[in-house]
Image 1 (cartoon, rainbow, N blue to C red):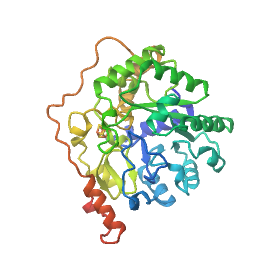
Image 2: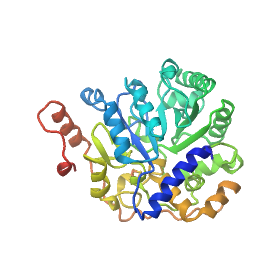
Image 3: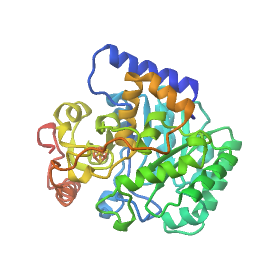
Length: 381
Ligand code: SF4
């Protein structure tokens, strides 16, 4: 696993404290989205089709650091939109690092080389560069030629400057195991510290709707990839061994959406980073007043095919605490890539999808135009 000892120790101590305190639900990683604006328009993205008035919104430095303090998670993943478009991003990152929280600064890398000097290398800072495969795969995924080359150049510069650099890779239904395995090999040669990999979530507003993987295809794809890389041990994944095992169909997990709470320009998003079904005015309200049992595979139609790390990595981490030997076995022996799969969750009783996006956008526009007071804790649904 590509997670340094300092991070394992501090995150482990945080989990232990929560465990000893008997806290049932607690966050592991804050998903901070200070803006939705991006300088790309990817086929599988469900975040950038807002009206300009919303795309122009930013969470300020103080709002971002306030969210970090409110949430208390030991890891903060800054996503978007493209975070490097935010003018206060260097101060936001410095503020989080000063709090000794681990920052994963996600970027498509188009502006990374230009902005690199605004940041300082730190064991608490990781550049998380979006790369969905080799040159052809990635440029197709982001719908623009030349992006892969720029990302690779930026990774080289960041590594030479002493930064920790990961890649985050989202796979879709056109992924070929042989090619993904070769891509992971090439990433290793670039000197990247870790790989975060996940199947794409089927965003209802993504431009290409036939682009997403079903659960059964996801599991077979990951088996076929890991089988080409010493059962996954060939590559340095920055994810828990049991999450990789889950991706390969060897674990049955319920989603843990509160493990990765999301703060956006709309507020605290419920239930998760992927789904905006309502917004809370505070982190406490999000945790206390969300009907968590209403979400996850088998419970809600929009969750049916989801196997994304923002919902299931926390499930795997909690399972690691409950079954450390099983986790160690997978880490040492690798992910099983053959044999029967673990049973999947039944979908018979899932509640039907609700389509609330348009209403939330309309409410936000009224707030921006001053025709409505910003949401308070009591009216956040
Ligand atoms: S399964 Fe969990 S992470 Fe995935 S969309 Fe549903 S609530 Fe979100």
